[in-house]
Amino acid sequence: MKKILIVLLLVILAVPTGCAKKEQGIKEQGLPKPLETNEPEEVLENEGRGVYIEVLAGSLTTEGLTLRWVNETDFEGVYGQAFLLERCLENTWTPVPVIIEGNYGFEDIGYMLSSQGEALEEIHWAWLYGALEEGTYRMIKEIYMDTRGGDNEKEVVEVKFQY
Image 1 (cartoon, rainbow, N blue to C red):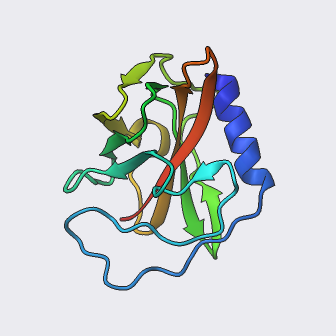
Image 2: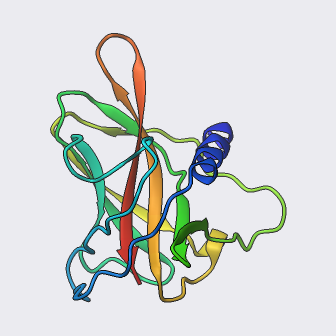
Image 3: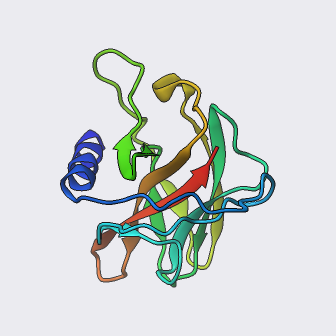
């Protein structure tokens, strides 16, 4: 899982991306609206791909949030606890600095996402990033989809939000 996180971080840092200007009128309540940006091909927009994540309404705090996983495909998926958090600074997605000195990791647990199913995942980042400041953020996660051919296809999904 550590290798996957490192590879994901390298892919994101290697592909230049830009942050969109803040959308006007984002409501303080309800789901954050996705922002339009130039994304690397590996990162999915939350529309049209069949598997996506979104922030559960009312769950966003400075120290965490609850994700809602949605699978609109006929395939099962497995996701883990690992995530990457980035902040839009000067029109560039920048990894949020970690507050832990030395190595860190995520528990290597696989959570099943059934075909045509939904699941909730509580994310607590205070242990890794501390409390968030105001700004535009995106969370990036991976899910492995069972394509019934014996292969697991990795999908990278994201959700953007403002705090």
